[in-house]
Image (cartoon, rainbow, N blue to C red; front, top):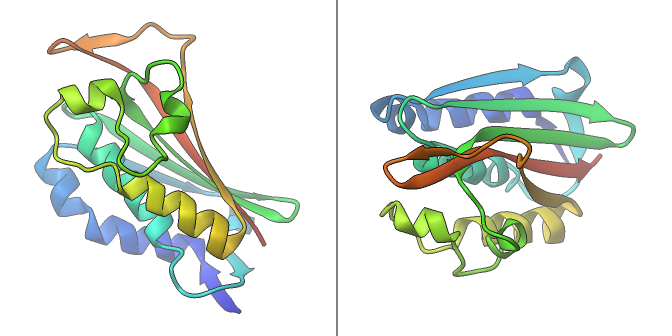
Length: 164
């Protein structure tokens, strides 16, 4: 059993990503609920791969000087981490398909950004098999898509839920 401080993990990630994010003019904001900062999670020390890969994708696929918001909180016996950003619109069914190995969204492929569709499949596998958690993706279809350079963008939220 390992003790993980969520704030420290996300802070560590923020130190790894800034060069990449800053170079691309992205701003990452963090909001930690007090109870989410320290919790006990059983398993090997692989947890930071989960938020890292999702934040890395948010930086990679969001346009221009987009903002990426990271929020954590604890409710009952679960820790929640949400990463929200503006991302290429997902077509019907892609909110699930992007978690399959080798799959990328239609508009994400059109961006010409490098990727093989492996990162999110690793995230889901580690989250579910190692920590008994789940990762989901929700696209905000209540707001109109923003068209930039021929690519439609919408707010997209990835949610990580881990039992503690």
